[in-house]
Image 1 (cartoon, rainbow, N blue to C red):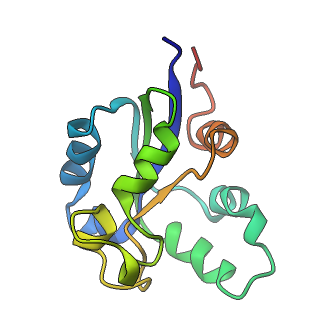
Image 2 (spheres, rainbow, N blue to C red):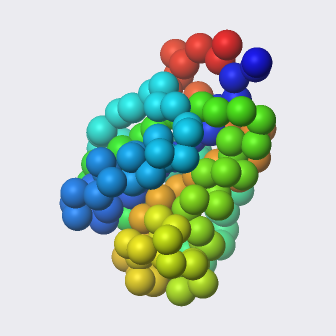
Length: 141
């Protein structure tokens, strides 16, 4: 079986609220493996690279500022084909107002402000690009 990977970032507000363990355990209980983990404050340039497709949008400067304001918990998760979609389903709707109870955003985020608790890659191609930003030496095998 081929390994498939995705990136999750537990955002600063969730780190401050001490939710990392609970969030990670949800992914693990869903059958996903944790193969990369960093708790670190990254500079704004890192998030400028991550969110490059949003440059020029109204929310972009605040997003980069918010993500670089404190430590994040960066995860590489592995699972069968479809791991990206599985993680996004576990996270719930991007806007927590629309996230179902029982999802990570539905349970822990009330609104988009200050943030929506987690970032997750939206495709296998994005996952590979994003993992390399936070884990430059990660070996895809």
